[in-house]
Image (cartoon, rainbow, N blue to C red; front, top):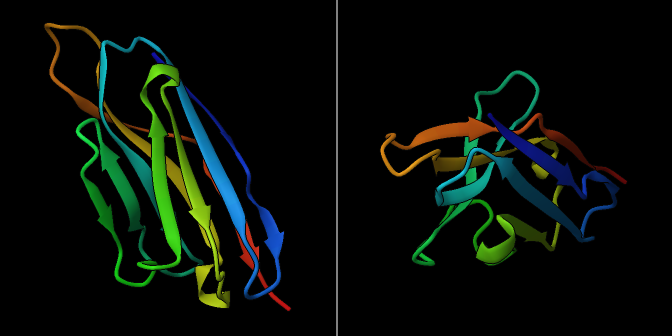
Length: 121
């Protein structure tokens, strides 16, 4: 069992900033990658940003230069600093982690419950 605590969502005007955080706990041997995906109404879930345990980053083109992902490995926590928010960033943001539950089990993807981010004037 893996559990997530997500925080930081909410409403913001265009151009503003929000920071999301996600902490994983439970049956965790090693977290290989953490990040966020988002889903807007009527659209498919899409990658926002991920960071691996080796600090390799991957960002969606639409957020490059505006969003920054970071990670505190000791606390199994990831952060997403979102600056220059746009109306198009409105979506439910889902925390995702690729986790090895034990040394002998293969890694699998786990998802948080999601947090709403709304950008409007």
